[in-house]
Structures are given as C-alpha cells and as structure tokens.
Length: 399
Image (cartoon, rainbow, N blue to C red; front, top):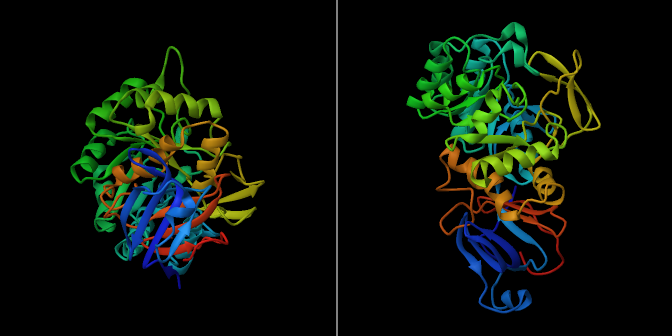
C-alpha cells in the first residue's frame, strides 16, 4: 500500500509554478490536494522547515508537477491492450515510478471487434481512476507510413467505424490518430471534434494542403511529429510544415535520442513554441523492463540496447522511454529551460486532455501530483494524489 502524505510541507527546493521557477520554494500537501505552492517566508531552506510537522527539507532539489503522458502503449513488461488488468496496472505503476502520474493508454492496430473489446476493458480502468483515457492509434492509418502496425489490418477511417470505437470506450476515448488524407478522413475528424475527442494527424502520407484541410476540419494534434510521415521538403513541405506552423496544433515529440535528432527536436520546439509541444513516450512493454523479444499487436518486436524494432523489417516499434528520461535529456542535451519543459511534459498535455483543472501544475486545490528531482534531474520522489509512489530517502526532514 502506498503511504499517504496526510499533511506534509516540501520546502527549500526550486519549485516550478505556472508563473515560473521559485527559488527556495514551498509546497504544502494535505490529504490528496495541494493547499499551498509558492515561495517560503524564510531566507533559507533549512529554516523553512522549522515549525512544520512533517516537513521535508528539499534543498538542492526540484519540485515539478507530475508528468502527463498522452501516448503510451505499455511498460514494465505489460501491454495496455493485453486484456489483463493486473498487467495493465503493473505497466501504469512502472511509469508512475518514473514520474508519470497521469497516463492515457494507447492501442495499436488490430481487428475492429478486438479493439472495441479492449476499449470496453480499458474504460473500466479509466472509470476507476487508474488511467486518464484511451488513445486509438490505428487502424485508420496509411499503409505508406504504417511503422510498427500490421498492414493487413489497416483500413480507411470510415466515420461509422470510428464511432464504433468511441461507443465501445463509453466516453473515455481521448484521442484517435488518423491518416486524414484517406477516404473518410475529413469526415472522421469532424465526427471526433463533435464528440470532444482529439483528432490527431499521424502515420500519414498527406500533402501540405491535405494537412491544412484536416486542421481546418478540427484536428488539433500531430502524432509523434516527424515520425511516420513524409519528411520536410523545400518544394513539397508536406505535413510537417503545416503542423508546426498552425497555432491550433500541439505537436507530440519523442525525446529518446532515437526517434529524433536533437536538431529536429529543437526545430519543432522553437518553431511551435513551448505552449504547443507535448512530450510523449510512445512506450511499449519494454519500458522500464529491459531488452528482449515482445509483441506489439500481432507483430514481434526485438528490443536491443533499449531500442525497439520490428523483428521483420527493422522499423522502430515504439520506444522504451519513460518521461523522466525525456525530461533529463531536455535539460542536459537539448538545453531547454526547465519551466518550458514542465509545460511540455505536464501542463500542455493536461490541457489537451481536459484535466488541467486537476493536474498539470502545482496550484492550490489541484491533485497532489508532483515529482521531486535531484540536482542531476533524476527522480527522488513521486507523489500521486497525496500518496507516495516513490518515497524520498534524503536523510533529512520528516515524512
């Protein structure tokens, strides 16, 4: 059982608030909620914990909001489409231990009846509060840009079939990835927008103009920008230019060092701006588990040195990324400001998912979802809804 922080003050850390970084900051947690977040009244971190029962001195650390992953297929050796609740929860727990306190379960291309059945199963875990929703990645994607999806199971985005998946998810569907240039693509985007579900452009062979048309119809997300779409060209800019330039689009980025060169990430981050980027993992079963042979839908995947590829063909097959690693890379390799990273890894996806009133930032009244990072940006503690998923072992203060 996780230990609940009934009343705890975290003091002395650099605290990242929506307004920026507060040196020598203070966060008070009571029950499962944040009741205070801001600067301390005293001059030093050590003094700030005096007089507060249950205070924890976090001098030299960072406190940031819990991470929000809107595109994740599994972890801890488990797939989110396994149909096994214990396995799914093991995967969720694995990502929680790496700082992801809000997680959307992503599917992979399969038979329609299978996806509908799994959607019903996952919807129960959403209703229990273990997941934040369901993301359907496939089967409505381009065979030209299928990546690690079974071509035999792909189909055009018929609005009636899209609606079938939404109905099966019982109101828990949060996003559907589509190749919007396919027959039925634009009508499916409109259907999703009407039902308050994110229409994401991805695994697409669309032209620039076709992408603009999809955005006008209501698409708002680029599924793992750059990956599984035509490259940026100077005469045929394709979807990448359209997605980066439109203020209505949030671009997903997989910051694992495999999916994107740092220069490509920098281009997207600075062209779109910190408020239009969502760091995701696109993780599969091996995340937080290790190398080996896995299944991604009906396809066999080999994971070697942390990189997942199809056993046949060698296409990249998701990632083994956890969001704490994405955060650390963003600081140490990409040299991005910490406040901007927090927007991309917490606030922006929370806003897209419609849960920013509860998570995504450190503000009084919100869920006590937060991550403690040490000076090297490694996870030192994780609090979810006031319960310690990873309890800090700092040798100072009282929990």
